[in-house]
Image 1 (cartoon, rainbow, N blue to C red):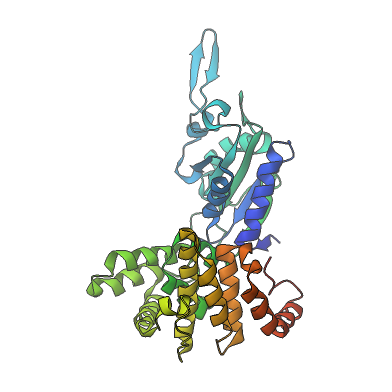
Image 2: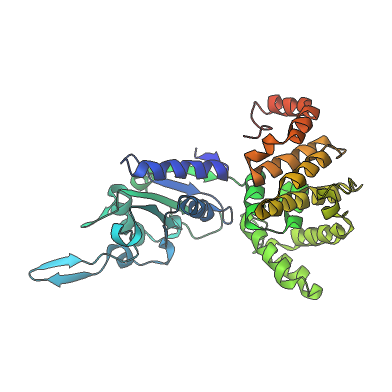
Length: 363
């Protein structure tokens, strides 16, 4: 059984493996998962956060010689040229991530060429620089994609993790990436729609972390063309999810004045639960913008006061938790945070015990 892990935990594993590569104790990592869950994004995020290059090789699109190189004669010997795409310490740096994507979709002839690279970190005379981590990714068998069974000798050289979509992780990423707050609010309201993939169905468009990013792009591109917007959103996440999203977005026009709440001039709480979700995510985005401009304290304090006004305390916990993920530990220094935490201490304790510990904490 492959260990199933949320994206933030998989990211932590890859960060450890990147650090271990320089010490010679790195083990190649294999990420499994259906299309659209963000396997490649995790590897890219690790590389970006550590300031190292990511070399992304799509094995399904390659020929064996693309990896092995082309033989040529040198005096009385035949040698192999090293492909420029492979990591080179002088050109790419001492540390980085070599990401072998779509490995399960590559034909056996290409996979065979990758064997030595993965098993021994070598291809002929070429060697992967010591500080480089090897990460591969592929779809599971039965995910309605082109796939080959990974040979046991190759599989045994990887540590295997199945990436499982997780809403909290996606929300944290989405706020950082500037995804429309109405989409984030919608998925908080309908968390079951973050990912819906049924290999037995023939639908080309379906909800996934990747396709919700595409829906965000559709809102940006077609917001001034309502006759096209609904079809564009459905083309990203499927008909049912697209219709629900657009109904939610339309209803968001009845939200109270977010600026007035953030500046303390209003504490209006809308009656509709969907509007409350919308207000929560809009306030998180407002706090994020305030932090970027260098003056967040007053805004965050007002938002913390507002969290106590929400009739459903679980929604207040969601607001403060998402706020923490967006602006970090400075939240703890505000007296309003201590006041809010005191008001919901019984709820946090109950959730902590009901989930076996840790689910409701903010660290």
